[in-house]
Length: 248
Image (cartoon, rainbow, N blue to C red):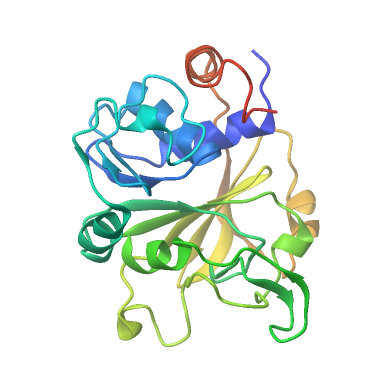
């Protein structure tokens, strides 16, 4: 079966999740990825949404983090404050998904401003809970379109910290970025700097290099990202998102 870039990103993100992981789920591709993982290789995945639902098992695609379908079958429903303080700041969540307007080579994310902070070209929505997620989960998975303007060598503003100067542990930050999943490649980190770990089918090194704002390194054994299986595509299209709300 043919597949879209979004479907490939969903399955690539799902493959990073492990059985028994606890994950703070976002809407869109992360939501599809988490629910796909739970229906395939990670049935014991504990999904936590920002609205405070813990152990969610939604019967249909939630349209927002506040969708009532998330409470049906959940292990617990907490206030948003308790979700962020007890679970997130308490170090009880393994994985968090993030995106942003810019991601630099050290995994720092900008969702605050483009340009100078005091006189920006574009003012963006800001952190929301993103900074807390990046600072407190054990593994951050970043999902973003692969475009040169989105991948500068340094972000214009650090909204959510990656591998910051001086080290994360020194600054009281847990974990760190594990992978960046784009529509061209999967990037990993070595000594705090991003490199290309796998290329999506049909994508060349030159295409990734041209869409990255620094001289990005490639792994010695760059692999090809596994394409979605027919079973995965059937779950995504028929079960998770039959109306194509988030799919290309």
